[in-house]
Amino acid sequence: MASFGFPVFKTKKAGPKPSVGQGAQKFNLEDPKGRREYFQFKAGKEIKDIRNYLKRGTFVAFMMGKKNSGKGTYTKLFAEQVGFDKVLHLSIGDVVRSAHKEIATSKGRKALTKWLKENFRSFMPPAEAIAAIEGRSTSSLVTTELILALVERTIDAEGKKKAVFVDGFPRGLDQVSYALYFRHIMGYRDDPDFFVFIDVPTSIITARQADRVVCPVCCVPRNYKLLCTKEVGWDAKQKEFYLICDNPACKGARMTRKEGDSLAAKDLKARLLVDEQIMRQLLALDGIPKVCIRNSVPVREAKSKVDEYEITPSYDYSLDKDGEVVVSEFPWTTKDDEGVESYSLLPAAPVLAMVKQIHKVLGL
Ligand SMILES: [Zn+2]
Image (cartoon, rainbow, N blue to C red; front, top):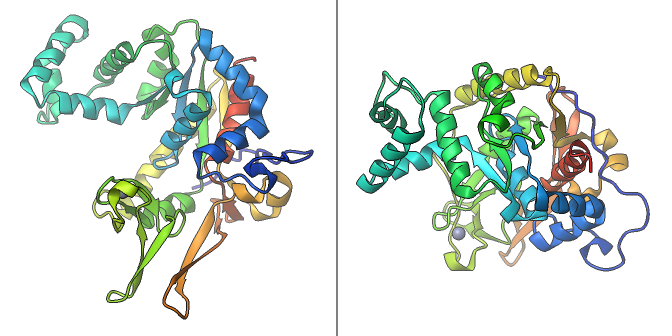
């Protein structure tokens, strides 16, 4: 796989640092308060303009990135800054899963069947569409038309006054033209639409996947190597360190590696190749604006382009002489798809690049 060659976005800001708040030293980007101060400091004007824009208008953004490239996270951080009530994260996978869940009850099944009868224009009868959603029919699959119908129903339920971030569509080249006319289909006619391309080196995606742990109680994900918790425990019997969930409600639950939810390495690689291929095709499209962000920065460019606290740290654990766990933090480096020694950036930094570019696309 090769990188998309997007330029490194300079997030380092010239001029004095703020004299108060976390920014006096560094912003804590893992914490909502730290992120608010960070975005105010680095993109205060742009955030304000976008907030004002969203009072009167919306837009449609197609989040394009390989599997596990952080599309959902970036959307969430963007919403955190401009207002959760103004942004709809439309994950196509979630839309289909939620329909699947709905029809598990007879009330839900009736409601969806009724809705399909009245709204779904297709050669596929409602009963067949339901079977396709349930995945029990091999002859009928969840077609693009059916996906769009379910998406329309979700947007109607959520209200049309939100900017929409579409995640998971278009999935293949056959869906591209639907995406290009998506805003017309969904009744967002006069609102701007654009693609957001996320470039993440494969090595970062696989590292995130490999050391993923989750809380057995609240299911919050962390990463043993790249995103640790405040408390780390030591299991003397197994001779291993483990992360302890930060959520007080989980009462010190030990986070565990999740088995079976990740694709096998071979399948993941195939999937990443398909994702990459469709991104390359879409990058060649004319007539629709493109926002390009990358979440890695070559080590040699880091000092001039980004601040140290924007770099993803890696964690190492050891025991001191009293048997207490010591966590040490250091910048993590990996090779990007070109083989260049690089740092990975914490999500806030690429989102900053996204905010500034969206500001431009909207002509604010
Ligand atoms: Zn928990």
